[in-house]
Image (cartoon, rainbow, N blue to C red; front, side, top):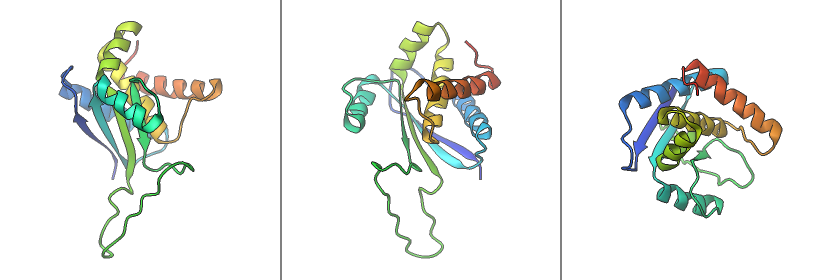
Length: 165
C-alpha cells in the first residue's frame, strides 16, 4: 500500500485543476516520507466559507470560517469518539484502519490569504494541505516551539515540491 489521496470538491467558487491534485498527491508523498509514513488514506474536501463556518461551529464551537480543518481518524485523544467496527467474517477488512483522516480547505479563505501573502493560490492550497496533514499525524501549534516545528516541516515539504513564496 502507499499514501493515497481521495478528494472531492463541494464548492463552486474556484475550479480545481487536475495539476493541483497531482501536486497535492506529490506533497502527500513528500510529507509522508519526511515522517517515515508509507501507508494510509487522506480524504481532502474543498469547501466554501459557509460550509467551513458550519463545521467550525459544530465541531470546534468557533463561530467563523477558518482556512483549514483536520479530523484525524487515528487520534487517541481523550475527547475523541471510539469507532467500533464489527467484523462479520474473518476476511472482512476494517474500512477505516488505514484512514489517517479528513482535511477540509476553504477555497474562499485560500484565495483571500494568497492575495494577502502575495503568492499563488496553488501555493496557498498546498500549504494548507500540508498543514492539515501534519495535524492528522499529531502535530499541533499550541505554543511557539510547536508552531516553529510545524512551520519548518511545512516549508521543507513545499520547498521539495518547488512551491516557494
